[in-house]
Amino acid sequence: MQLIGYARVSTPEQSLHLQTDALKKAGCEKIFTDVASGAKSARPGLQDALDYVRQGDMLVVWKLDRLGRSLPDLIQRVQQLQDKAIGFKSLQEQIDTTTSSGKLTFHLFSALAEFERDIIRERTQAGLKAARSRGRVGGRPQVLTSKQLELLKRLHEDPKNSIAEICSTLKISKTTVYRYLKKE
Image (cartoon, rainbow, N blue to C red):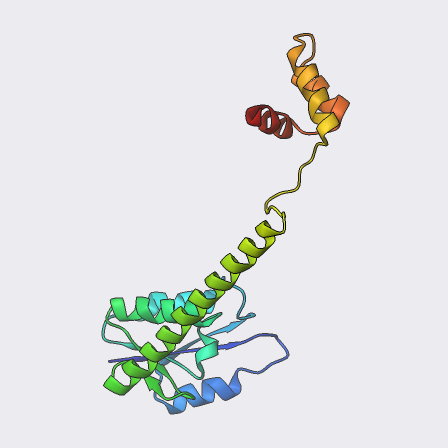
């Protein structure tokens, strides 16, 4: 089993030394790094580490938040590693998915993340329902007023008017014209 390290800092002003020193001390033979915000999905160092790590190896990070952008993202990444028979270890949280207690801890994190997603979904649905009961309708605001819509219909009924002329008259795009005509 080979230990592969991954370290990340958010800005160039920050130093990777704390993380890389801890990863070396933990026995990582190869360490990949990124200087990128955790919110960015494109992290070439992480992708290189994921491409490099093989079945039976272990990906090691200094802290959980170095790997994932959010708890659901972290859980998805660790699940992908487990599907490939690759272990995961976080030094600060002392989580090792190759041990029973590490798996349990990680599954607790997974359950909490799923619970959080369900609560967010419920709140969103309740908010939409409350808005609808007050007469608010979601979605994109209407571009045309009712008068403009009537004018659009009359202009379109006259075969002398081209779509380009209708667009120019109403100062709207062809897409908008076709969308309103499709509704009618």
